[in-house]
Image (cartoon, rainbow, N blue to C red; front, side, top):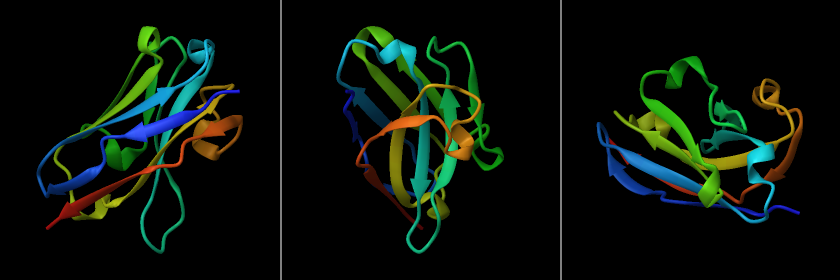
Length: 124
């Protein structure tokens, strides 16, 4: 059993930056690919990006490329989402997820654990 806890959300002005963390319990963190998702008010959940278990491979949704960076520290059992040049439309609850495969996370497949989310609010 793995528990995921996101942190780092808050209020930020448009154009600013925010870094989210996803801390995982358990000793098998590196065996999971990690994904970040977000859900804006009144909208469906949206895939943000994925990082492989080793951290060597990352994938991003087109709208996040160049602004968001996903990383992980397996020694600390933590994944990160660095968000720069934030826009009002980035306002959402951000979730991390652990999955058994890297390339299918964006479709919601292979996800075995979810965090409870952290709210990011971008003021215009």
